[in-house]
Image (cartoon, rainbow, N blue to C red; front, top):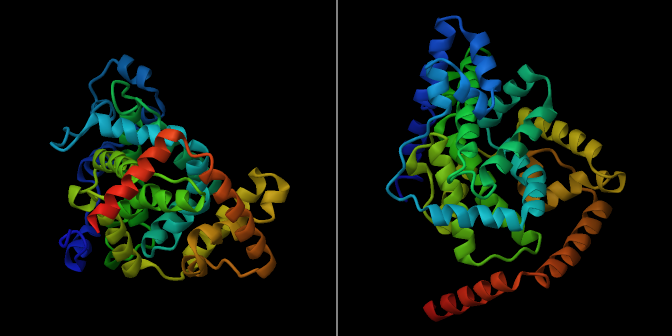
Length: 342
């Protein structure tokens, strides 16, 4: 773990993207096949199989990284089942916690900001991110059903395209490469470890075994996304340590982070019921905490903040008393084991 969190190692990872996907996109650019690139990217898995060609893009999208020695299909499935059991709070936290958490990290948020400007559609990133999460966490989609792998490979190519164009924009090479290894690892943690932290605030109580299975599933997803294995934590404790190191290295208040958050809030306020829309900023602030919320320019509002704190406290108690019996037994079993170890 010491190497994973060393500044020298993480500095190096800022200058590494995704060589396989980057080289493939560069090839499509050099051969002036960008129309083919976009067309192939839009095809379904079935349509890709029917393509009468062995073009590199087809092979890449329908492939996957060689299985690592540590892979355990049963653990991956258990992690997916945790999503299946708690899909509503997890998807809620994705928008109210994970995405704004990523916006606080600079210079990684500069790549997100430039990509948003190119797409001119803040809502698209949110909906695409939500769909990707569902696609990879639906039970079975990383096992016999290959659908999850297809979405992972398409995401790698989308990242490669973004790296290519952002690098040609107002990008400072001192920041590393856009969507680099450290930033991808940070995003992976935002969708895994940070979600687990948020679930606790929701009153969803998971045993340590359940938490580590969920993290293991995201470790496998991260591996298939092309992230360096050394940046993928092996335990809840390692995830916590790496999250804190990245936070110390990169979290600050920036114009990009504030604007991205404003756009996210504006979008969320249009898609939730009017009464909830009134409290979107306060809810994001509750999940993120005052420090990170401050980096994103979320203001204090004593009345709204108090209402949200009270509402969430009630919700947390309600959720605690509706824990599935199996999860409750695992929770108490884990507590007893930890107590014996003290």
